[in-house]
Amino acid sequence: MTAPHDILIHCASIITVDPERRVIEPGWIAVDGNLIAAIGTGTPPAAKRVIDKAGLIALPGLIDAHSHSGHGLVRAAGDADGDLWFQICEEIYAGVATPDFWRAEARLAQMERLMGGVTTAVSLLGGGADIMRTDTPDAGDAHCDATVQAGLRTIMAVGPGRLPFPKHFGPDRRPVSFDEQMEVCAELIDRHDDLLGRRTGVALILPVYAQDHMADHGPEIRRMATAMRALQDSTGTLLTQDGHRGGTIALARELGLLSPKAALGHSVDLIPADFEALRATGATIIHNPSAIMSIIGRCPVPELLEAGVTVCLGSDAGAPDRGFDMFRHMAQAMHYHRRHFRDPAVLPDGKALELCTIDAARALGVANEIGSLEVGKRADIVLLDGRKPHLWPPVMALNRITHFANAADVDTVLVDGRVLMEKRHVPHLDLEEILTEAEAEADRVFTACGRMDARVETANSWKQARRVTGAYRAAGSDE
Image (cartoon, rainbow, N blue to C red; front, side):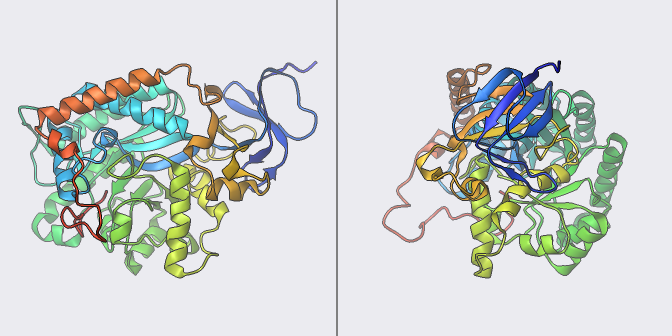
């Protein structure tokens, strides 16, 4: 007699994103250990535990390929004054942020991701004006501790800041060189790079440089790029970058940074040389349709896909004006490119879902393990409650989740076969404790840098078509 499976999930619809892109209605998924053991229809097999709720829609765990640590505690700071927001990020991330700050922010972000069905994310350890907190391993250790506690998968991206060096960190603004930051990155990789084991991966990140930077700092930029590629090759990690735009991808190729293990964020207003660099090297693109950079420029996603380039989706969250809801970002991406071409056939719903499932897994180098619901793959499974007015009637499951669903529709989440949330209850995490801790840390860092007044809404958004002050800077923002 066959032994019962560990878990059996009854589903109204299963959106597999498998090679045949099957949508099974109705069906069941069996899980043994951390793997999907079977997917089928008809009479289900026996199981030790059964998840059965009317109307469940199953899909692969969502993947957010580009976000920022720290941002969750600086949401809305500056009330849409972009320059002020960047300045506050630098003062907090490089100055007053302690390991407790990074831990509290990561716990908050992981809870938001979990409750929104995001099971894997890439999170840069900092951001703003290229402030990567790699003066010591402490911030990265705290971030990874929160990932392990949450049970999700996070690839933490670490690297040096932007020229000039030294960078200055901590309350005493201790000077830190490029080489010192690289040593910390290597140490963090050694400690935490185990995405499929303990679920904490580590990627490397180097600031994006353009040709005008090369005129003044060419030799130094080349030295840094060579050191970064050498560390990547010796460790086998992913390389990501934040803020590419026309011509900078071609330069990254010239600097030796591009390979199939390079995932490039934003990537707006690309030129033919950028397309050629992507085709020649196999590097991938991370589209962030809800980001400010997608307002001041356009990532040519349909054109990239038609050129054979792998594209995936990122939230760029959780600030200054967005969150980790990948359903929002899927819908945003579809509308964004359809409006550009004035064609509702552009970027169909199936491709939108692929961008944050199988295509994202491919970009991160783990498509043989996650990104689709297939027998033998990791049991990263998201179940939506389809019995909602905005998701009814129960037809065309793909259309329903890409056009109408949101993070609050996520009912149950499994990662590696472990049920992390069921019926929106997260038994291993204390939501109230996480919220209280996050609020206290946010209050502390804003007080410490004298920026509490930047958390008060101004009156410049009422009764007018445009803000009078505080416009986002028109160029140079990668947020």
